[in-house]
Image (cartoon, rainbow, N blue to C red; front, side, top):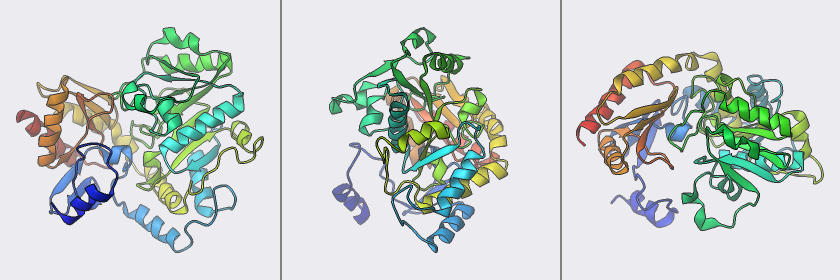
Amino acid sequence: MSTNKSLFFKHLAQTSPAPIGLEISSAKGIYLFSTEGKKYIDLISGISVNNIGHAHPEVLKAIERQSTKHLHIMVYGEMIQEAQVNFAKTLCDQLPPSLNKVYLVNSGSEAVEGAMKLAKRYTGRTKIISFKNAYHGSTHGALSIMGNESLKYAFRPLLPDIIIIPFNEPDHLHLIDKHTSCVIIEPIQGEAGIRLPDSNFLKKIAERCRETGTLLIFDEVQTGMGRTGSLFAFMKENVIPDILILGKGIGGGMPLGAFIASEKIMDSLISDPVLGHITTFGGHPLSCAAGTAALNILINETHINNISKKEKRFRELLIHPLIKEIRGRGLLLACELGNSELNKRFLRIALDKGIVSDFFLFCDTAFRVSPPLIISDNEIEIACKGILDSLNEL
């Protein structure tokens, strides 16, 4: 065992009994390079973080430029910082007019926490509705609205007034009532194994929210930043949320999250109490500089326009008797094997062949195909060959 590997197990808190354990020396584009000199295709993008690939030169330049100006100077919201302003404006320019005010935080989970507080503060209500097999993060509030008991039972009691209803079943929407502060939903469920909403399901939720004065929150931490073929997944559903939650890919590989709402809704955090939500490092200038560069790359280059073509190519090539179904949209795909042990064996074999994939928290029978959006046609063919070769060894 290498020195770093032994120190990894000795000094870093572990999240599972068997971490992947690869020691990575560098990463570029769609590739990870181990300290042993082996090259791996990253088919999970650090779990939908590295949408424009690893070590994009424009992101690195933006980080370097900002690092010569300043790092942290004051807790969020007190001083005007150019990097934060530029990022917020660039982001709002891509959103509907009603989503015009950004609260910057450090991660998706923190953005979920802020959005939940904002909904309660604005509506004066306490009830929150989320969905079965939803994943919104691991902090206590986010855990409370998680739609699967497997990761939350050991940490109860959690927040009260949480109601979890089935995804894609409109018959339960009557539970959204005048006591409900918000409905929080992933427009495409991620950790459930990439489950798309049925036709008009999100519209029916939005209609019920309007009828009852309930805020609609879209968690686009995993679906945002071009991954599904539009900058944000809600853009293809023709439903605009009251609050939008972002994370993962918005920082270009740096830690960054955001919750976004109208000025009227967001300003309810200003008073009664003052500092209704506060963060020390949220919207760190290095992260905002990286985020602006990453967002401009997605806006100004052709990556998003090519997503549907790349999805089609993956679907054409990943034909195998063991793949029972491919679910998803764009480059957020789940390949269903229908057997968790089979999936575990596949993931080990694929890793040996230089393919990094993973299972889903609430669907361990399927593996992820969510590479950086910059993946080329030739790289798609190489990745698919590695997947098929791995499946042939099962």
